[in-house]
Image (cartoon, rainbow, N blue to C red; front, side, top):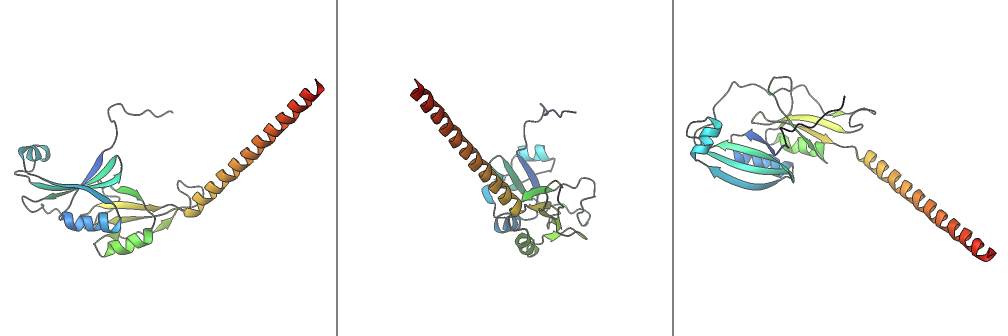
Length: 198
């Protein structure tokens, strides 16, 4: 069955994450992941209260660039302490749990640096390597849970696969070039013979 793109949804702009401290959150998103903050703003107008339903809401917002068209919006409620919920450890199988998937180049380094900022592997989880024939064969992945119960899935693509693909493409291009050169030489010979015969 052919899937159709929804006409109601155009594209995803950003994902918002409520945090206890913008500065602490940016230590991970900027310092560990190496992403850029494009803007930090504070809002305290009626619009924020109406949009969020939080009385007298004042917020500090930091926008972290993931791609040219997608951002993470970190939200700190500065008007009053963030409400405390039930203290639970975030797990992927809890209804409502969401995670952001990020492709990275140094999975082990990020996991190690993240520990110092309260980011840990999800309880009883581990770094896994995807088997051949899977969705991302040879790639490594891990779920990390942050101090604000946010969750990210880090995926480190296997470098060898990309290099092999690149080598194959170069070889194919070289073979095509040789064939083209041989075809051109063959045509010139035919033209020369025909001209000589005249």
